[in-house]
Structures are given as structure tokens and as C-alpha cells.
Amino acid sequence: MGITVTLPVQDTAEEDCFGRTKTMEVRLAASAEDLRAAQTLRFEVFFEEMGARAANNARLTGRDADRFDDLCDHLIVTDTTAHDGETHVVGTYRLLRHEVALTHGGFYTAQEFDIEPLLARVPQGTRFMELGRSCVHPQYRNRPTIELLWRGILAMANRAGANVLFGCASFPGTEAAPIAEQLSFLHTHALAPPAWRVRPHEATRVETNLLSPDSYDEKTAFMAMPPLVKGYIRAGAWFSDGAYTDYDFGTTDVMLILPRAQISPRYAARVGVGSWGAS
Image 1 (cartoon, helix red, strand yellow):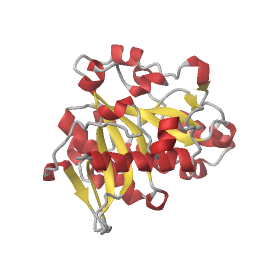
Image 2: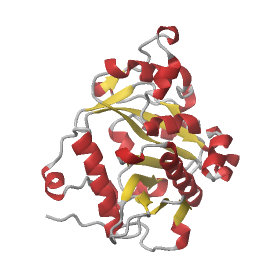
Image 3: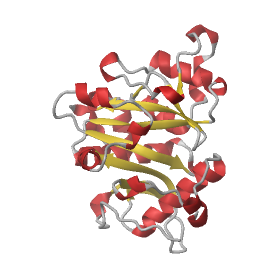
Image 4: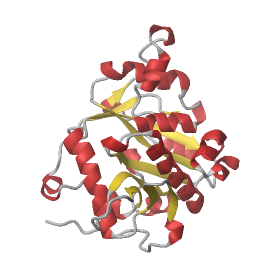
């Protein structure tokens, strides 16, 4: 049983490659094969590694896919040392542009967080880009891979004219106690200011203000963060007031909010797209 996919970006132009190292490159998915490889990585990470509950079609195909895939641009990091003719995707994000979301039923994040008040109170002309379905192969969960992904994200934000990034970031597990220190660190050091603050939907909300700062070691808490969350913190992101328990995926999710002016210039320069934070 196959899954029919269409991609917002269909060409393989050099401009869709945003950066390279000696062994990896970050670019947009440019074919159905690229997208299938990204969906396969997502299945391996979300379902096989993290224990998410797979629907029948995902079990049959070995790929994680939903209706948003047809609407999004798919950012992929590939290992270019492979020589078997296949696309070896080792990291991926899917990116949903503001105008696409508005004409196709909204953002995925709205399923977990009450984002309508935020969208209503931001200045007119604010353009969002949603980050979602992010994952990295276990052997590539390191700073170079994360920074390549961020190079692609910021380049795509420039291309889309987006001045705010947002989306869900996940911690493994659905119990707050094992990640209380990490959630408390976010609440203490990276809580979004009131104008940008978002809360999860009530039914599955977990508070993040769990521990006082003097009751745990903050450096240890930061180092225990998932690599992608650490990347958001280094970039300068703010986070939601509260987390969402996603029982289907077996995760506890926070929402990140990153306006253009908030991004760390040092981080943007390090990933090679310093101009994104300039205005």
C-alpha cells in the first residue's frame, strides 16, 4: 500500500543546497525518493526507537506520513559518502510556510497549543514558518548535523520571507518527573515574554514551572536536553508556558518561538546564515 506524495519544491537546483561539510550536505527534498527517505528516517526514530504508536499504513510502509507532508518543504541532511545510489537521509525537518498554512487549514502546532491568540496579537505583516517532524539518526546526533539543519532552516526562512519561526520540540516519554529539571530550566531561562507566550490545550497540559532553580544543577539539566532542543536554546528561542503530552508519539512537547530579532547573531553566524537575524 503506497502513499502518494507531491512536493512543493520539485527541482534539484544548486540553490536548494544550503551547505556542505566533507561528508554531509543540507538541502531541500527534490523528489519523491527524497521524501520517502525522510519519512523512513522519521518512522525509524519516532516509532522504532521512541515507541510511538504506528497506524496501520505506517506499519505497512515503514514510513511516517500525514496530510501535512504534501503541504510542506522538506529539509534533509544527507550522508554523501554513500555509493549505493540511494538517498541516505540522516536528519530532517519539514517546514510549513505561513501562506500555505492559511490556505490549507492551519498549522500542525495548533493541534497541541492554543496559538490563535498569538497569531491575533502579533503585528500585521508578521510571517511565520513552522518547524516540524524534526529528527536525526542516532549516529548523527551531534553539533555539526544540528548546525547544518539550522543553516537550512534560516536560509529557507529568508527565502520564504518569514520573520518568526515556531513549532513543537519533543522530550521522550509522557511522564514529567524524569524531565522535570529540563522543563524547569526552560521555564526559568527561556520562557517566552507575555506578548509571545503560548499555552498547551488544557486536556493534556503539563506545567513546566516544576522546580526552583536552586534545587537542581542547571548545567546538568542543559546537557541532558535532546540535541534539537539544545540547538533551539543556543539559537535564542523562547518556549511555551507549559508542555503538551502526546500519547500517540510517546513524547512531552514544548512549543518554541523564535522571532527574527531574537536569534543569537553568534549562532546565526556560526551556521553560516548571519543575515537572518539582522532585522
